[in-house]
Length: 339
Image (cartoon, rainbow, N blue to C red; front, top):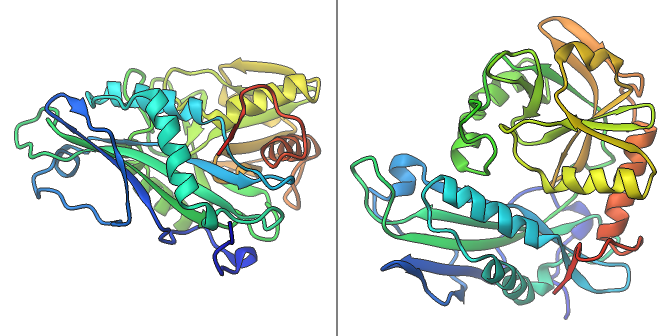
């Protein structure tokens, strides 16, 4: 298919309207068969559940053009599972996992001319989400919902390479121990906005949240899991209050099976931070954002990997995972979903 006339190499990370979105409505106790639409607006009641009580969950994944010209998505089955679990937690009727995957296929095929060419550094970002669409005034779940998938071509999260970030230990709590920190709900991101604006105003790229119960252990940032390197060990956080990042789980597999590293998923006390050699934030948008420095209320924790470039082990992890996504490196079975 002929590609759109877009300057792929200069795309930013923002929204560009594509040809089609996918829509399915939940009414009378069931999801309808779904459809593609060229209408990218949503009309709902002023009293809709999503507006009154933030009843919405979402996902994020990407479609790529591989080295051999195929259009693929990366591990959409895990996004389907996570959206299903998120919906259940907010009393939203979950969208069936098999239908989620087919909806991704359908909407990407309909927008294939917007999937950036191989080598451009750009990708097609895919945003599935569900929201309460019917009127709710008492505090209770909505009765009707809409599942949608929008797509938009995006450039690399970091233009000119990923320079190490400086982040701070947050003054706020991200999620309660038995709250909603483990699901991808809009409400979790809303509460982080004030903290991230404050961090930016103070000259930091992100907040690193400690656990809310004791404020002595690493949890995650406002939108990413945290990884650390110590010798030949890949270390990441084990906590019931963090989002089960698909990128982080993929990096764990890459570290163990491709790079021969020892993987540790465990509690990480803040006092251990100076012992690590490299640090990164991982997620769909950037894959890995290297961290060069963490500031804990005036005390600087500087990683030996420095502030100039991604640490050597982090770079190997990044290159291997992106190589798998782009078809340059053989993928584990089931990771690459061909459109």
